[in-house]
Length: 293
Image 1 (cartoon, rainbow, N blue to C red):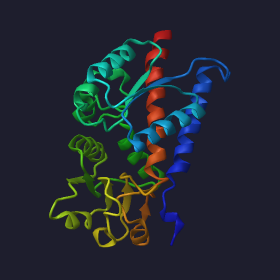
Image 2: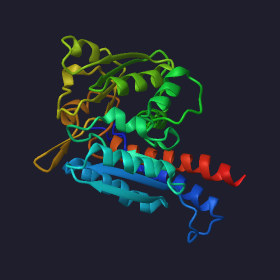
Image 3: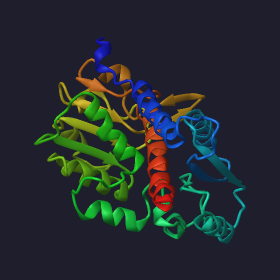
């Protein structure tokens, strides 16, 4: 096995977080004890173990880079109205720069309604309809990207990969996610095909792709015969079974056939958190720095 094929998301994430630390220090005139730090509010509803794990990771890593977190842990029986009231308070709170609702929400909650209730200027995940509309409207650079699509671009940038005229296959569960990531890649001149895991011609599509990106949450779903020789494989899927974490890709089977691959864990996950913090810092700069001028 050639270890050069494995994309170290943890190392890439550390570089991004190091830059965030430098920027926050610079904003405080290199005085680490100053209180001018970005503030991120995270709303966690219910008791999903994976969601609790993600929130604790974000809380821990945010502290390392100089971002203050405000965690709102709500029981699953919390009424939707109460969640909206929390978001309303956070929308109005001048201290809070970014708001994140940890997804998925428990059954019975209207995710779209809750996301739409956020102030789009504080939407750190960029899921608000206004932010999606802006993203989809043009290929102008400068748009703040959702953390996962931003991660995909950073990963491809790290291996100096030119997307122009490359065939990209996206396997997704979410139509909104697929369309937004697809648009971002098409803006880089890629030829994008969006498919679902249940599609009859799935293997035909995946085996022709120069870049295969999968986000379906089915462990070891992608097998060796489904992947093109020398393809780049980016595994966004994550599933926890028997205290072990798996990606969508059968890593052991696929790794020697492709040119580059992201592992799970240690690939997309750490990068997504780093990109989330990058967005939080950008929202802080847009609001707080602008207000001081």
